[in-house]
Amino acid sequence: MALSVAAALQLEVFSRTTVRVYAGEENLDHTIRWVHPVEIPDIAQFLTGGELLLTAGLGVGRTTSEQRRYIREVSAAGAAALIIELSGRAFTTMPKALVDEARQLGFPLVGLADELPFVEVSAQVHELIAEERNSDLVAFERLNADFIQLLLASRSHVSFAEALAHHVGSPVVLEDTEHQVVAYAGGTAGTDLLMKNWGLHARMAHQAGAPGGQHNKSSMVQSHDEPGCTRRMIVLRGEAWGWIHVFHGAGGLPGVHAYALDRAADAIAIALLGDRESGARASQRQSSLVNRLLLGDITGEQFVDRALRVGRDLRDRPLAVVVLCKEPDSDGVAEAVLEEALKSLKIPAVMADIGEYVLAVVGLTGQLSATQLTEHLDRGGARAGVSRSGPAAQLPDAARQARTAASVAATREEPTALHFDRLGVLRLLVALAEGPELTRYVDDELGPLLRHDASDTNPLLPTLRAYLAADGNKSRAADALFIQRRTLYYRIERLNALLGRSVDDPEVRGGLSLALQSLDLVESTQQLPAPGPRTPLA
Image (cartoon, rainbow, N blue to C red):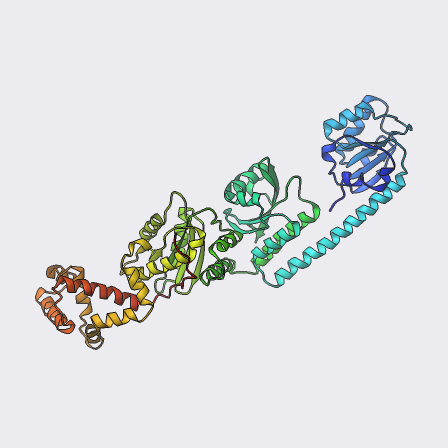
């Protein structure tokens, strides 16, 4: 950490006299790079910035204009502060012109009541600067070692954000070029609140507060209602991949911490260059989180907390689960449909691609209910099940509900999105399908017909489906099958003989319809997620 003027004034050598700060109290955090005893009037031309100037006042000037010019010149040259002995060599009191000019410039002006050996002041300050620099070097080496170890371990950019938050002791946010948060570490109550409207900070604060807008490589902003924030661009193959932000409070980011931010940005870029599947890694982290929820390894509340760390803010929202069935030979289509739907609705979600389905835990809004989400997915041609909405504690139950609805959606001829509350008695059939009871029921009701179709070149099951769909209307059933009515009569006689019942009886048709739905559930090959431990619904 750099040595400030305020810290230098606490050294033992200054305790030997009375020290008074006449001006520039607000800038005592200026960094001291070197100590320079001076007694010539044109010292400013030899300064390079960061010098702590010690003088008996012999070169400051006697007239008001000379003294004002002296302060202006050393301040413009970047001196850290001016310390003047008021022991009588040049002054016994601090000249008013020096004080007034220093106050206007905010330049630190310090007076000493007695003489001090400047050589001792230089020695103590330089010793402290050397210690600080050595400490910085140790910190730099530790930072380098930590980031190199993460790179060698092929860790994700989330790990780098967490490492940076640890080193700087401040919250860190990593976002992509669309200002979507992909990692959040070291959060505080203040930054947790800021995350609820991240786009306002990312799009407005930095663009308004730094030259070059969103395209500048590095910027620092601070407003009355936000902590100070410094961001650094992540550059990948000459293009902006995103930005990493550090919230550090008032003032700029200290030297070692600024170095840590730069190293983290560079390390993330290197990790992304070596990781062609960065998008797959992000999906893998979400899948791992969903799996832990389904296995009961974490609670719903813990799931929401961990989702925030990977940039998905589900806090203070009603939550619902969507289970999307994958269509055969449509690699990636289901995920794209669901992702695009959620993106268009501007709602956050944690999505997992697991085997033959995609599961998403979705954060709803006051303007979007689970039923409305279902209708939106249905219009988009998704084959999916959607749970009821509820708090985080009910997520395991929501996963079970979505799985049940998706089981029914998987049996429909056309892609359909179904809400759990629309299933009715089918909820019981899905529960029975998990055991042998439903299979036995199907065999009892349709066994002879199924055995016939398994060995005969003219199956009768399609005829039964069409006849039941027409609610016993023979003309409509024949038209649906593209056959003559007398052909349909013959097939119905065959069905009656095989089933031992007349399909013209409305009660028989009702029972057969239920049996066909049961058959569809039994034959469904969708491997849907197992629910976690149950939480009673409110």
